Image (cartoon, rainbow, N blue to C red; front, side):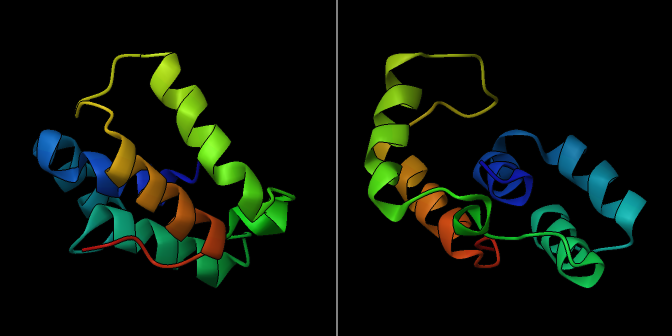
Length: 95
């Protein structure tokens, strides 16, 4: 999963970390700022550009939900699936 989208998912659960990241990259919002840095650097911003098929997103969500791991925000199906879709498209993270 793309880091800017993972940061957006955890934005409200880790505000101090988000503030430090935003300050380090000179942005008002860490996830969006990091995405924009990647765009400026020409880094692939879409999971599809890395060979992930859109048809694999539901399975990726199932795998993440079936293998719980510590995360600042609890992992939930609908928000995770939305995160994966946006990351697959290369869309800017949600504010």
